[in-house]
Image (cartoon, rainbow, N blue to C red; front, side, top):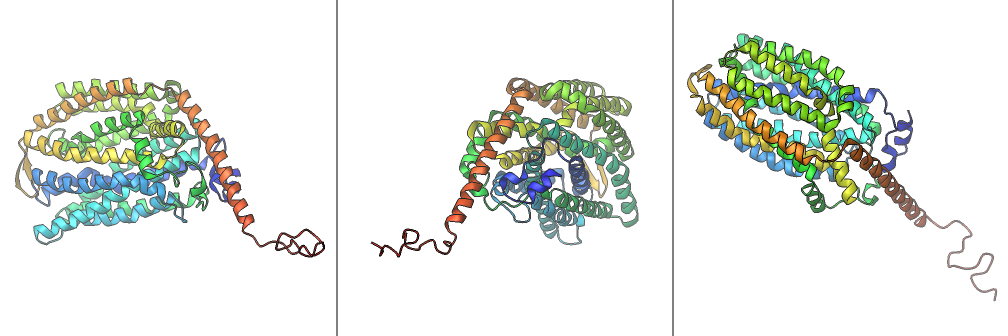
Length: 510
């Protein structure tokens, strides 16, 4: 393959992908995303329930503890992109971050769900350390892997869509597998070991699975992510751009702000932290949760497989607007009519999943477009930092969700009676969830309609212009390095050490 021949020669320009990438590369990103979804899923689904029902923290205490962890996490996420941008590991500038993530997440999940037979203070120490290992590495992972999508695909839109379509397919497929496996694993080990040990064992073996997937990713993406000793010589390269300029450019990028605000509004939503409560106390229990996830992911698997041609026809903006409009209508219906009506809930969720198809196929491409715009406008490459902003906004949203979670629990009269025994007002729980979703969905859709004012063709033209510009700069840097190396080499024999004329005797012939 041509890219492998180019990569073997090293250098910044040696990692430019051909017009059509190797067909295996999108599947490598599929494996990476699939394995990650396994590793993080247990804590995403059961963290709050485990803390209230087994560690016996009150909802207010849970909100406070998670706020501490998320505050640290958010602070780290603010600098993670700059660190990834400046680091140039010989083992792979971006792949190395992916390889490290799995083992660190395994440590984090182990300590979060261990719940040792110690004092409340020591339990909290274990939990916070685990929360650190679970969340902090994710900031670096997001920046690295999203930057790698752009590197592997280049400016070719079809290449980018091929990769993001596979990552979307991986998210759906992993969700399907998790629905079938994770809940059954948790229930099986909880029934036999008690004290919430099912969460611990399930989280750990699923993290080991992630480690294997990310090892495969690390090996397979080597041709696209080689160490470049001359990177600091390239004008406007990630290694050369000053950190202050990178942040200034990024936070004056209108498209970054559109994506940031929408992501924060989504992250603050209480849906993620109270979703399990809704099934346990309103929608028929965890068995219905397994049915819902399985049905949604089966449909999603079909939708994502069929959506790329539709996505190409609609374009990014219309695809996102389709998802937003249908989602808003569904939230209104569920706010008004869903309480314990599981069939109606399923109808709305499945319709929403169909509408999400085209926009989910685009995945991170909106952030890649924002980075192309910034490089084209400023001449400075801050793509890793921009890709990390996605993680930052998620962290900010999670920080805010601690408060919305606490408010929802208070609003629905949550009361603890003992381990695994709590009561709450299920109708209020549903109203709070979908009431927020209606308001945030409407505001988010309006922001996107107004703020995203460039077409896919305009972004594609910027990407191609950036490719040509950076190729020229890389060639100039390589030539400068070669000239410098030649100038420092020893003079050949007979060249005359003191500037004497050839054949002369050092100036004595006169």
